[in-house]
Image (tube, rainbow, N blue to C red; front, side):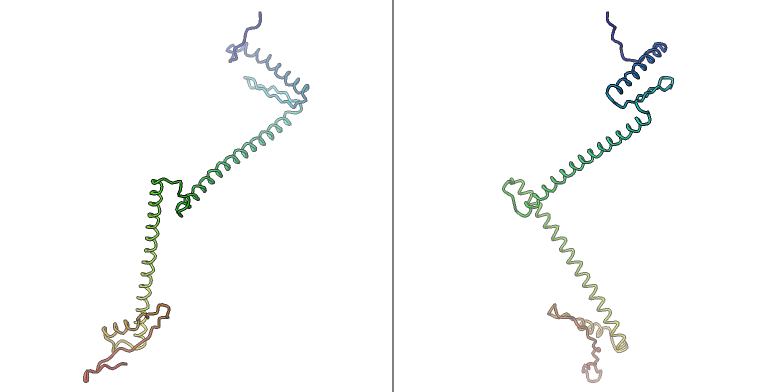
Length: 219
């Protein structure tokens, strides 16, 4: 009769477990030694018993085997990381190329090119996109124009105020009433018809009226 098949599981009986450990440990170490001799392999085996007792075998030295093992595993890990990183960037590049292709196709369609393959629904959608973009451009243009007009108005008011202050410094305010001063400043800040011609601000004395003759005297 042949031996029955042994179920590979933990042996409950401690005595049987210890006997089996001793037999199989010796067989494992013997096989490791034979493998090293027959195949010229560098072999290292480390075994800890359930009582934390150490049993080991090394064809050269255990330190040399462990150092070689660490070096090889580190190289394999780095190679695996490099391969994974390369694959990741390859996927990213493929996604970016597809996005670029879609953007270029959309740009050509917005420029009115390559429309032959579009359906009526697609053309309506493209038309709505163009109208929306055009409204946005016009709104932005209006905002810029309004801002420039406000800035010009502020500059005009500033020049007006500087002219008032300058006139007061030159001629004083004792002979200038509010109406004549406003008329003077309005005339002094007139805009020429030619937009390219430089604006020249001039100071003029207020008009005075002789109370006896009723004749206006220019200063």
